[in-house]
Image (cartoon, rainbow, N blue to C red; front, side, top):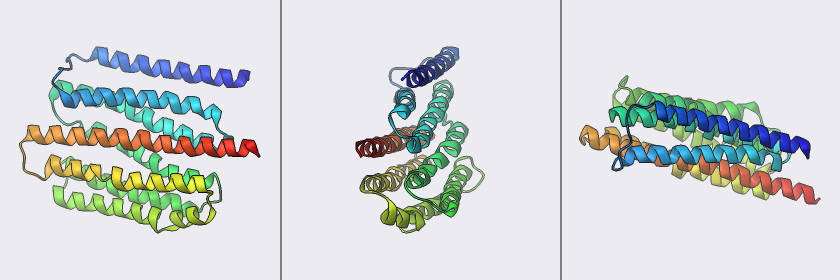
Length: 265
């Protein structure tokens, strides 16, 4: 009991420190968020949602069995990293009105591989999973991110870069729908894990489809720079809050369900 209480106190202390850092960062900004800046407002709202999710996931670690703690820790790290980056991106947007491409891709370079690791972790919690599954998911993730960044940062023409990114995404979809990860889930996972796995891969399919839409409206429609930047950032922001928070909530649901089922035996 005392150990659990101590863990909660440490988690709350870390959350308080995070809130303090983000508040100091906001106070240090020389620009003011305007009430009609809907892109800037979306950055703020999502920052708050990500911080709240981080605290929730870390506190809930004490509720689940040991084999699920790593998965919830990773979920909390995803939302934590994203929250910090969102405060910086908000400042870039409010101060300059430009798309914070570098910050966004630094965020994705850390958080997207962590999201892919979640597929490996939930399967590893119930059976032995070959390390090849992990590396195939990582390769697909890096190809997708590198392709997108080369196009958005201007190092490559936007259409070829878009195609490269889409190929990386297609490789991930193949692994989780028809590859070894999918077969392990179907053959070895209990119903609750199978359900979570299916929901997670639907997020990767439908939720991640929002990013190519944002890329398209941001770079491939021929609209004015202001219109393109607004569309790009709002779409990307909505995609991030869906994919990062919802992904973690799915992990939390199956972790709690499996823990409670084991405790009843």
